[in-house]
Image 1 (cartoon, rainbow, N blue to C red):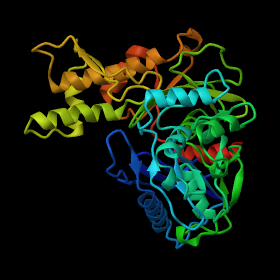
Image 2 (image 1 turned 180 degrees about the horizontal axis):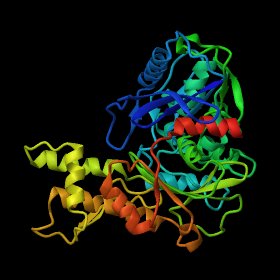
Image 3 (image 1 turned 180 degrees about the vertical axis):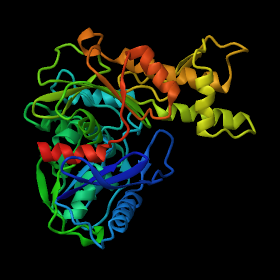
Length: 429
């Protein structure tokens, strides 16, 4: 028996066919290159391009397995969280407005938080409900033509199963804001006050449940396959590593996260930089989700490209950083701000004629990424004692060096993906 897992990320689509024990039979990855030109502060991607890449990656798996159609027991999907796609039942679809979108300013978000009756309303720019409220207020005419919405993965399963309504898992609904974590339903008064019509909101389904079978044969998946409601890529990544165990996971990608699995009861007082996220029936996640990670290194690389004729590869950059790992240059790499502190931008300190080099800047930026995450997490020593697993650090020796400096011993995990985790999560729920 085999199972398909798909991870629709910010920069790529990954897919795996695995056995029930998690062993991979076939896997593939495609950079979707779906970002489109939009006004400064906005972040959007082409839904059509992402869906075409999903079809392409499934075709690649069919070729590897020498089959015209993927014969799998079930399909599990996870995706980049927070973002929103809108569509109507006649076929029109919007762009994906991603988690990186910054169109909602501080004043607008303050007003949104007042719409909720919850003392700690977790909503930020790039969150689905914040985006929908902004569109309802500033682009109402174009907004009104849509009657469904969801994450990019929710739109995928809507198309895959020919559903009649939008659906969303409690994992992804929570990542949108205006969500009641106790009832696991939308915060209806907040939706009403913010101008979001109830009719457009997707129906919430608990993670781990199926929502139908494959009926759109253009995706080349056997029609007998069950399809699960998509979960968040955060939960998929963590489950691929920890499954039902407690521990810490560091993930380095476009952004960076440090996640701790805890029992269902969480501390009453948490710093504003930490979110509590739904996970399994027994555990929740304490998450420090920084907006800064690999994208901060891209900022440094663009800087040097703009002022120098020399072209350094990513490998060259990492080699130079390792050679300068003990630099006394200090970089606060919050170039994209943070959700809990949008005004906290990046800075460079202790610069001199000797350390203001490419290698030192990259090394100090990587150190700053790790230091920033450590500062965002609760200071409770109990959490520090949990084992740490690091994803995305393979062949990044300088990143490993700083992880060891700030967190102590860790295990590097790079053989599992969120796509695999989404399958295992659903099979074991």
